[in-house]
Length: 198
Image (cartoon, rainbow, N blue to C red; front, side, top):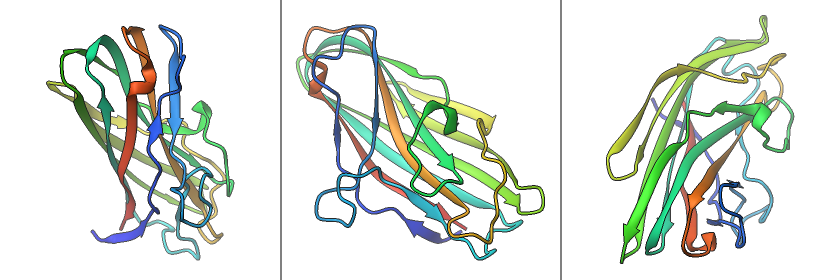
């Protein structure tokens, strides 16, 4: 496999200050300052012109959360979104990777870093207009939590692999809390890798 497309650098997402206990904050990654389209949702396009018609491809992403010292419980859920609409806005209805959130309990006098990674394997064709595939991932929350192989959720339909682009992808991380003793703005989410492989 080799890299077909690598997304531009993403700005780190700080969990919104004042998010209430037991709520969920979904941080969608945006394009970093200084890049074209800075501040807008970071989108990665699958090349068109029929290149992937009937051909398998893989989307890989990785990142980490920096969490300040304190005592609290949270959940972490990386989300990969896909759509046939160019410039789409990520939403729960187009999350093709949405494995169950993993619980993380922090009780520490020092900051913590929790890393995560995911891979989606897919293929499709213009005749059916569909993609199918599966995903796997992991979250290192003290003891690595593995996401077993699972079938893609919310897979786009009416895909034409000859259009530009036939599919676009976006990444986000959902962070929920059950209890906390300091502002959630002390959690920063960083995307370190977002690419398509052939």
